[in-house]
Image (cartoon, rainbow, N blue to C red):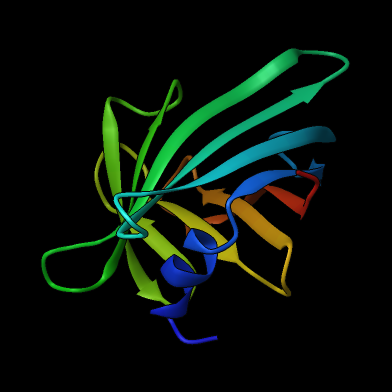
Length: 142
């Protein structure tokens, strides 16, 4: 998959995706992501939430995927765990990194096949290299 294809593929795959996730930080959860193409495919919104039986709603996120001024893909993420909107810039195909704030965070967005999304959050609370804390495997349901 070419890096440039992520935006186009998601813009053409609007819908609701559901699945399960797990991770050392999150524990097991059920995930839902609504994918919407906006401005004639120039941007895609990802409305993502994760719930589990123990904590109920544990994560709510509104993200916009767009090509930045330099042409590299960017995720602009708003969620309760981050201070305001944080920009994640694509550093490798499907890998977006933010160096702002108290910790290095990374989002891994993969489209392994049509109708499927893998969405993972990576970070570290100390100076070590970020590691996967939570990952959802989602399938298009509507």
